[in-house]
Length: 369
Image 1 (cartoon, rainbow, N blue to C red):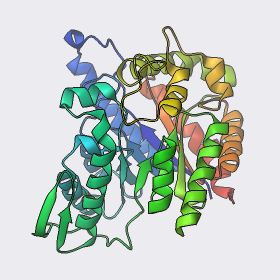
Image 2 (cartoon, one colour; image 1 turned 90 degrees about the vertical axis):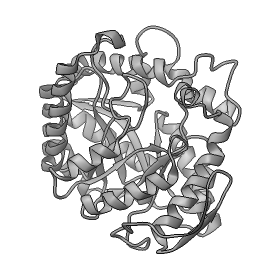
Image 3 (cartoon, helix red, strand yellow; image 1 turned 180 degrees about the vertical axis):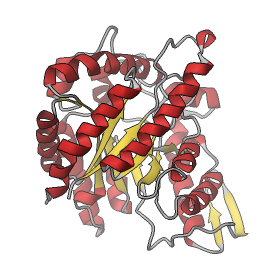
Image 4 (cartoon, helix red, strand yellow; image 1 turned 30 degrees about the vertical axis):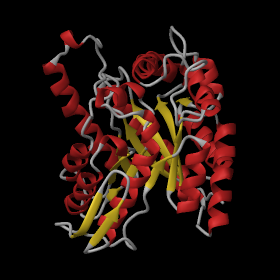
């Protein structure tokens, strides 16, 4: 069975000028997004993952675990999480305590997603050197696992130390019962590390051909370490929009995606990818990763569709493309970024309805080997 998940980065759809921030419109935006996430349960999404970003109109979810708590009270079945909490930006002890609380507030539906982060400007504003992010991430994740798995834990690390300590509340699910931890894995080093440690991975923003090589690399590292790495262990993020025809879908989605990726380029993409890559980040990989999104002007739509990064069209077009990619990539988890940029409430919900009615049944009937 191929499971469709919903991703929402929660972009600000109006002027990025902070002096023109519209509080009334933003209140409406929060309200209708909550309605759309409720609809996600009714149309058959497996779960919802939110995103974490700071100091940017690219995302209105700097504290995304609050969205998990809010939506948990309005749904019964959806699995809920953040893809991903940027661990170096947090006190890992605080995150572990939030996960334990959310385990109860969601009645065991919590999914844990964590990432190292690549947003240079966010780390600069927090005073965190980028060269420290990998060590902070790995040390923090080890502490979180110790806190969630042991009634009394100790921890000795580079950035935090605990003598014998207990967490209150302890999580509802034991480590053997809870869902596996998801890690947003981009660089080859992180992919190898996740395979060796037995973490699930989520990948994004790369051509299908490159992602196939990434997944093969992950599976090889996992097998070498004796860890399972089947289709359920990987997840792929794709921007998806559905309308009655290919032409209508493109007419609606293209300006919305241009707005969203304009914000992405401003807040995330490194300014000089050809000459300056931060210390601690793989130069060749990140130059290749960011290159399709660099430069001025609107996105090269045709290129990103051809690369498989945008999947926009009629129900049959989207269904066939998603099925093809799931098999090519060996994944049974498709993370669909279905609300983005300037899409309205009506446009978003129409797409969700079409996905649920005409795309999801075919996905759920399909088996990926």
